[in-house]
Every structure is written in C-alpha cells, then in structure tokens.
Image (tube, rainbow, N blue to C red; front, side):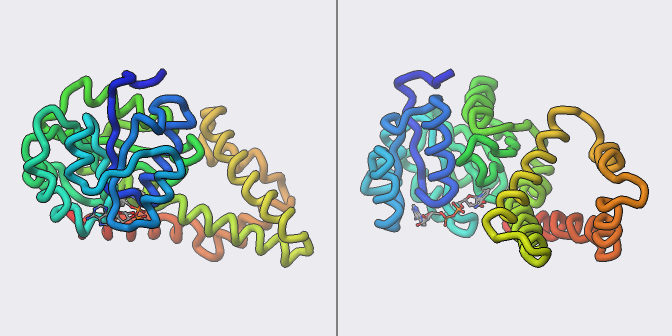
Length: 269
Ligand code: NAD
C-alpha cells in the first residue's frame, strides 16, 4: 500500500543505494518518484535522479526543508559533517533514516538535533524488490515511525527489527553479502566455462541456481543442511563437489567474510 500522498521523502546523497531505494519504492508503488526529492554534490548523480523524475534541490538543507522523511545515504565517514550542517533545518517533525554502516544512533541523534532518528541497514537488491534489511529505532522515534520504515522496506524486500548492537553483524552478513554472492556466482560461472559451457549459459545457470536455492530455504522452511543432504546422493556428483568445497574451507571462508565485514563496520562506530 502506498504511503500518504502528501509524504515527501528526501534523499541526502543520491548515490548507488539511494538510487536502488528510490527505484525500488517507485516500482513497488509505495512512493512515487514525484513524492521524492534529493541533493548530491556530484552533478552526474543529480542527473541520474532527474532522469527518474525525482526533483533535485540545490542543497541538503533545501531537501530537509521540503521533506518529512529524510534518507541519509552518504558514506559513513561524512555523516557527522552532513548531519551537523543539516541540524539547524531539522525539527522533531522530521524522521531521519540513516543507512550509513556503523554510525550509531547516539551520534546521529547528537548531530541531527531534534529529528527522530532510525538506522536501517539495507542491501543493494532494494533495486529488484529483494533486499534483506534490519532496523533499529532511536530513542525519540515512535511506533508510527517503526511502522512507516517497515512499510517502506518490506516493499523493497524483507526487514527485521533488531537491537542496535546487532546492526554491525547485519552489515557484515546481508549489507555486504551481495558482494560475496556476486563473487560466488562469477566463480560458479567460471567453473561452468572451464567445464565447457558457453559463458552466457554458464552465468544464467549459476545465478538461477543461487536464486532457486535461496527460494527453497525461504519457502520450504527446511534447514539448509537437510536440503543439502537431500541433493547429495551416495557416491554422486554433488557430494564430490561438496567434498572439494569442504577441503578448501568454504564454510570458514564465508564465516570469516561476515566477521571481517562486521569488524570493519565497528570501526566506523
Ligand atoms: P555512494 O558513494 O554510491 O553514494 C554516496 C553519495 O553521497 C555519492 O553520490 C556522493 O556524491 C554523495 N555525497 C558526498 N558528499 C555529499 C554531501 N556533502 N551532500 C550530499 N551528498 C553527498 O555510496 P553508497 O554505496 O550508495 O553508500 C551510501 C551509504 O549506504 C553508506 O553510508 C553505506 O554505508 C550504506 N550502505 C551501502 C550498501 C551498499 O551495498 N553499497 C549497503 C548498505 C548500506
């Protein structure tokens, strides 16, 4: 269901994630592009947003003055500077949603003054309505704010409410996770090419295999270990492949990737 027609969503920073969220919300029919505005210091990014039908403001302050809900989508390193500059334009009527990795609610609240603040950690598949996200509410945010954020991000995929101390782990798993899976898809396709498949067919088979496997985990509610057992017949091809992955420390590599990304997120805090 669409958010109220009068609700104005403003993007502070019109980069990759802001674009994925804006396009996702528009195509889900939850927020139309003409309900969104944005500002970015990069003219090229402003042009991308304009081409979507999203009005561009000359400054972040103008976005704040014309919005009810602000999505803070700049890199974590500059959140303090950007939020502090915005502070005089923010009131308790603003809901500020920060998607910046590692930037704490306490700091956001300090820098953004009176605005109600929420942290969301989404991931890039917002673009295709398949994000995996989590949110934590700031102390001044209300139940209505939580409902609105859930409505926005459920339209882009799936969002969970978590304690803020878990958000760095969310960043390490699902925030950064598309990068790991893109790497895995590319490697699977390379394997297919090494085994003689034409590249486009190998890539399609690899991506569809990841998609189908994920759907089975989500839709059958079976434990992934059980599904793995079900596809690995005695002396068969799948168990031969799994044996190679185990020899190379496949599980440990993925666990270490999540832990390393979590630790990096903690450094921004
Ligand atoms: P990005 O570099 O694509 O976008 C950031 C944008 O901010 C750029 O377009 C830049 O020009 C703009 N910008 C810089 N200074 C500005 C200023 N003073 N005022 C307005 N705009 C300014 O980065 P991104 O990947 O979209 O990441 C944005 C945020 O999203 C980060 O904080 C990141 O932690 C978070 N995030 C990213 C991902 C991801 O997969 N990329 C996933 C989850 C969360």
